[in-house]
Image (cartoon, rainbow, N blue to C red; front, side, top):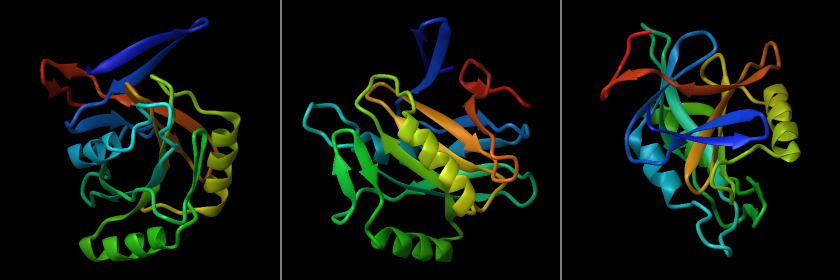
Length: 185
C-alpha cells in the first residue's frame, strides 16, 4: 500500500501517497472506488506547496459500473476565476463548474463529490469542512450511493464517503495489495 502514516495524539492517520497511479479504495458497502491517475495528476498541480499558494478545489466526476456497482473517478474540475480562494479557504463560486458537469454527462461522467487542498503534509478536515460536508449531504445528489470528499495535503491525500441517507461520513482507505496487485475483496 502506498500510504503515509502520521501519529496525531493517540490516533494513527493514514493517507494515500500522492503519485500518478490509479488507486482502489474500499467503500463502506464493500464496493470499490477507483481514483484514476488523471485525477491525481490534476490535483498535484494545485497542491499548496509554497506559503503563497491558496486553497484550491472543485468537483469530482466519474461513473458507477452498471454490472459491478463499483465507482470510477476520472475527472475533476479545477479552480476558476470567480471561485473564492484564500490560503485557508476555498469556495466554488464560478458557474462554469456547473457547465463542466453538464458537459461531462455527454462523456457519461457525473458528479461524485468535491475535493480541495490543505497546506498540511497530511490533511485533517477542519470544522468548516465537516459542516460543509454535512450541508452537501443534505443538498447534493451524486451518481452513486455516496458523496465523496477528498482533501489533498502536500504529501498525502485522504478520502471520505458520505451517505446521504444515513448522514454518516466515513473515511475510506486503499484496498489491500499483494505486491503491485490489489487483493480481491
